[in-house]
Figure: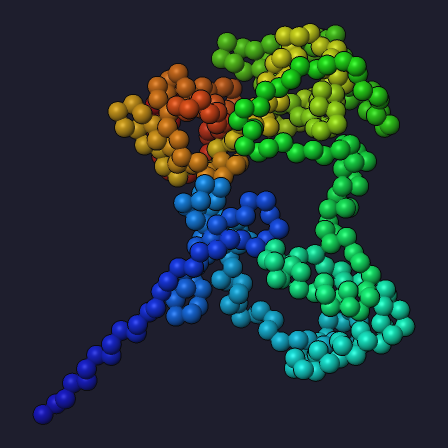
Length: 355
């Protein structure tokens, strides 16, 4: 009689989801869903039910499990075993490492505790983790540090070039309206622009073609169908030093001040600035479905993943020169495709059929 071994039972997988928030020093504070199997995190994803997260995470946080369990992750203290800069280290135990560090800190603190500088910021923004070392270093009498190490350096640079750096409410961007330039004209900047860079406003002719494409002509010099306008000093000099570039990104020149321009031309330049700063650009098409003349879009944009609906495509999808498209959804929101011929994704051919 031949006995047949019973098949081994399938291993039981204990799976559950942990809800949390990203601990990084980032204004988004994304909501996380972490899938745990048998005590091991196997996936971290954005919570689609959280409006600001929308189910999408940055590349850093979405790779948490891979970094946490990576075979090359350092899990034990390393002590330098060769000359400084040689990259030679040896593994030591935690007791040895802590004893060595404590002895060296005590020796320095006995001479001058302010010679110890706790050069760090948050690591994570958790209440415990962020402040864990403060009591220890205060007890030592160590020097105190502006904890936001990167921000003071940034602030000094920004204020030297742009002035103060106020920030608007992000949720108010949809209602933003460009204000007209007002007098008086601000003081001249310390480093003047080279004269060859500045455009003579008396020689400029800025209009729009019938399809809405902006047209810029410099009398007796050049003519450009389509251009891009960028503020060189977007905070402190909003209406001065506007860089004008063609659609390849090559700079044509700089408008020193919008105040010196004809009102109609100034309005066109401001509209192009508004388009650059507030209109999301579509970078990838996940799906584009046509149901009885109504288009359902699922795309990646320069401001994250978006889903929207467009009715009457022939009226609400405008095609300009060089493959650029502007799309208006049912709520009046604008989206832009910089170049339809280079747009990756699925169902892109559907656009050509509709147009």
